Image 1 (spheres, one colour):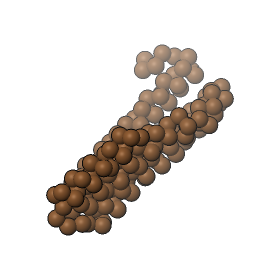
Image 2 (cartoon, rainbow, N blue to C red):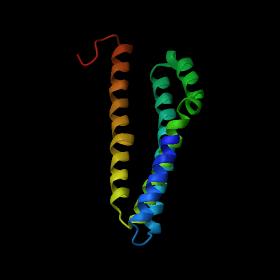
Image 3 (cartoon, rainbow, N blue to C red):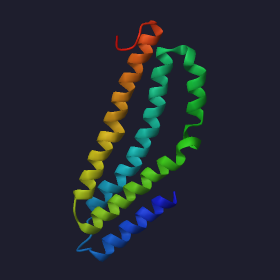
Image 4 (spheres, rainbow, N blue to C red):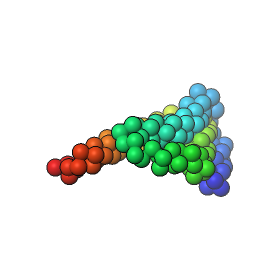
Amino acid sequence: MSSGFFIVGSAILLATTVHHSWSWPFFVWGASIGPLASAYAYLSTQAFGRMLTRRDPGNGARVATRQRGLWERYRWVYSGMVLFGVAIGILSGGLDSPGPDIAFTILWVLTGVLLPLIGLRLILKRLDHRLMQTPPFA
């Protein structure tokens, strides 16, 4: 968590020292991606757990236990994502440039949306093969 505050502080320092003018739209764009990414990570993890439980009801109790501890276990990750988004917003707003916002948005879509969906597909495929008792990817 302290690293998140360090990142925010560094963004403020950089934005104020090289600042030409302030851009509220760029700030809002960057600052909103952090909470959006955090909420998406939390909610998609819950949704993935429900999908796994539907495919294999035998894992329901184990998945439910993990789901209950999701916030406690990963709260620093979720909070860090929010702080990182705020830092990106401060940087973009202070530099009056969409560059950091674009980079953060692309990074989030690739690593926070696409990779987990690919991973889920592989997990579901392995689970289906295990349930049918055939070797995966055979």
